[in-house]
Length: 71
Image (cartoon, rainbow, N blue to C red; front, side, top):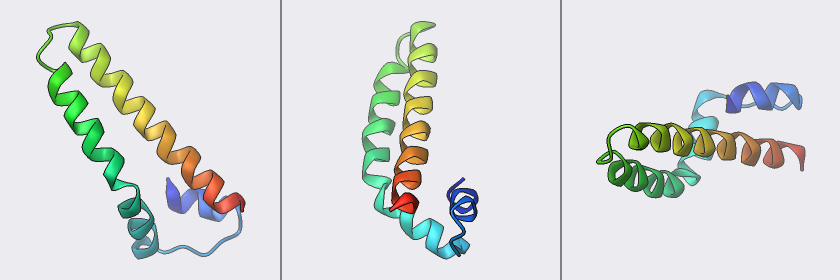
């Protein structure tokens, strides 16, 4: 996703650079993993909550990359 966004903005970005960018965003991933672990204990609603948290995290990473390349 990050590499595709870089191409949209006519920027050169290889896999190593994309992974470095995502590495800087990894701190948020620890919070997401914790939230998903806690929510997973609730049958039914936990699955919906996990999907929502995962979607929001992916969406946030995409928009952060977009803002990064836009500047």
